[in-house]
Length: 99
Image (tube, rainbow, N blue to C red; front, side, top):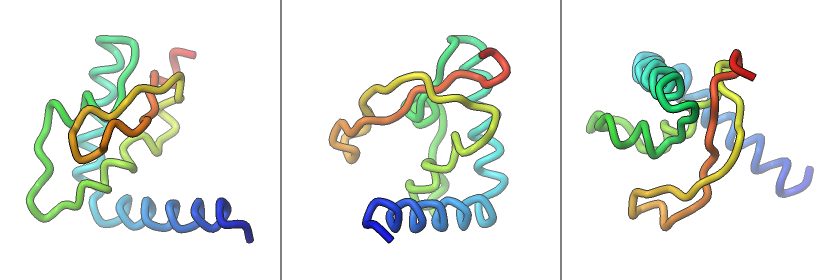
């Protein structure tokens, strides 16, 4: 298995863990993402971070699972705005049913 393929396997395993462990938090984040996308046309993780606080016991990596849903379709890229992200590239989404 290539390093890229192994990286995807590891990422997906971690996101699946978050889906099980942090279901309520992710549902809340996704509902917020849907609301923002309906208002603005697009949404990214910067928008979610701007409107909520992570619970103290929740690792920030859980936010990687927010758009892991058939509700969203990636349509572009932007830079993460929180300083710990070092301006890394993040996806921009729109609601899938609006394609």
